[in-house]
Image 1 (cartoon, rainbow, N blue to C red):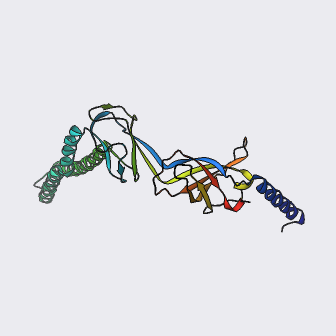
Image 2 (cartoon, one colour):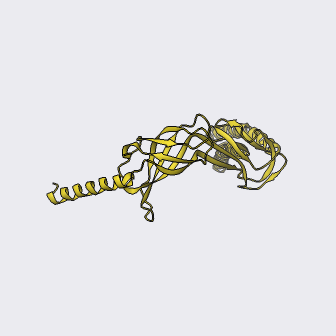
Length: 274
């Protein structure tokens, strides 16, 4: 049950918030800077030599396309060997044949023992031979599974020698050229996506507290070609900046004209405009 005291308190908070909203609202909007929706710098996880760079700076790329390739000739040769080993079942077949033969020998000795034509020691020795053959078969199967795992591991490592674009975007910077040696985690290529653009706006706390995802805003771009584009709120931070009493609000705005990221813009929130 909600008390009258708490209801009055909530009402006072709403009134204070509305007063703060009017004070914070501005026809001029809030200044901010556009950012790429994605900005990713790719690196190799193992050292090597760059064999091929498939694109130039400024080229458009699709997610999954190979951008840069390390020299992988030795790794491909090793992968071929491991693939052959992973498919070879000769040892398993040999172990199965050996086990079958030892079981046959055991049955013959057991029948012979029933006629007192074989000793108990010979029968026990044959049983032990069968057990050893069973273990040899298990070992052969285990080693075959390990060979398959080694092949899969080598295949994964080989794939890591190719840098693939994780997004649809464009090549912003290429740090390495074909023939250069590259160290682990060194910057190789930078890929960005600028359609749509993201804008992180420091919104006064009183305004941000009543905003929600999906709300429409206006983003005013500067000259040349000054335009106003409609965007939408996609994120409101949960933690405010205590020093400035602002909350980070992220705006997403379409960028079909491919304006560069990094422009100074003004974001206007129509719901608070006078």
